[in-house]
Image (cartoon, rainbow, N blue to C red; front, side):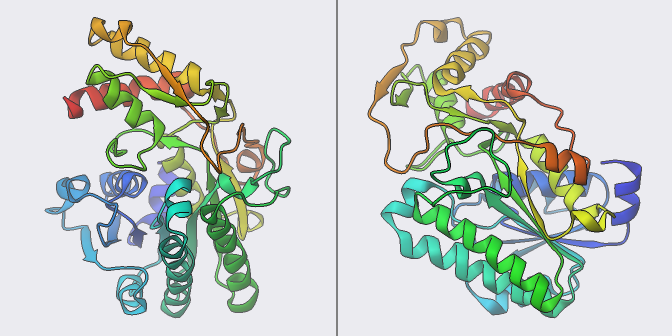
Length: 332
């Protein structure tokens, strides 16, 4: 955080929904490290208590156990908040295909509850987690914010609806919003367990356990993998910007380079082999592609650079090294 950002947030109250989750807990940590007052709203359906345990004795931190599907919980959490960083959602394309109703309840109804509560509480700015899945079947690369395709999953539909609701709440109720379309975020505290675990922590855990990671397809599908510190920077830039032109927009949050899944697995194997040489001999396996997966993803980050001063510090290699070190220390 810059000195100006710290000054902007001095004496302010920031609510982070989903604050016990992967991205949310990293946001909590960064803000608390700069003496910002933080409230965390989480129902622990996917968030983890151990992610926020280090903060519980901090008098600047307030845990509110509640559910964004409950409007009263949203009102309670938004009371006194100056800014909202809305991270709470049910992620995962496969999960949404298996259970579209719950995904919609959390990601659409819960999102609307938070917008209403933020509006009524007089929140200055509502920054929310959007998704690169909004680009859907639009094939052109890199992805530019004002050109999207048809959604390919229930999850993608919910995240696009978030953008539509945010736009309406600005035009109708004058609530300032900024949407951040995350591209394959990874880093410390990302959960490697469960049926819907993200690819990087899942592969890391498998390598550490001397198991073969399994790539969907031939490994040629590519993603714009984005290290968590870049995402934290973007949230703070969005929350604190004084550029009025930047408000009520959506932005790609990425590094702006793509890596194939095979390249990713190869890099992880190399970095983990520095801790355990036996990992170098583990075979990488393949299976059929998943329904709803897009082949390639690459973001243009020009808009974020121009309007929000976004300057991502971590490329895929540097980010993976940081993530691997954290996982090696915490998964063993």
